[in-house]
Amino acid sequence: MNNTQNVHFGIQKIEEYFSSFLTSGFYLTKSKTDRKGFGNWVVVLQSKQCLIKFIQDRGSVSALIGPAWASKDPFELEHFFELYLLIDFNNKNQSIVFPPKYDEYDIDKKLRGLSIILKENFHDLVLILNSEDILKVEKEVKDFNLQRLRRIYPNIK
Image (cartoon, rainbow, N blue to C red; front, top):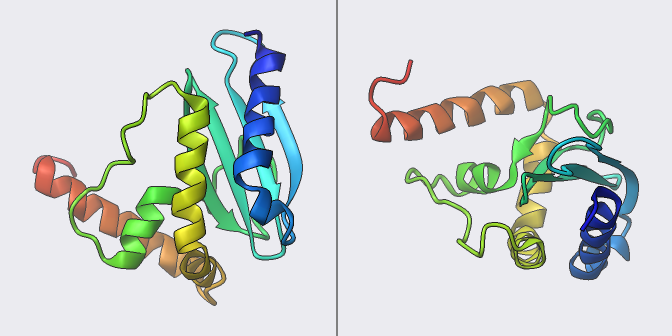
């Protein structure tokens, strides 16, 4: 599959699995591909509530979520949170929960799994993202993640 086919497949699967989001105010704002190397791509969904960036890097797909006012530039990550980290932060889950282990390079299964977890947690995540002091929340999430990592890797500074 070439780079263009790869991103079109990703968009097709995002439209399929995130159709409930697309029919309730979300729309595709940007998609970019890396024409070199691995055919990496980023697809951005936007609504009045938040932005979601789907990133395919070397065949593996992840999702980042940020406030609606954050940059729509596909490669700008400031004010964005890795989806599973923000869910763990919200649930005060102190153990590191890794995303479900689908075939790491099966874009279809990864996007289906991301749609399920996002649907289950969407309301709570939007409340966090629309906090009056998002910079304070960003620091709290960063500290939360660092504390969890220190339990596994005590030498992390």
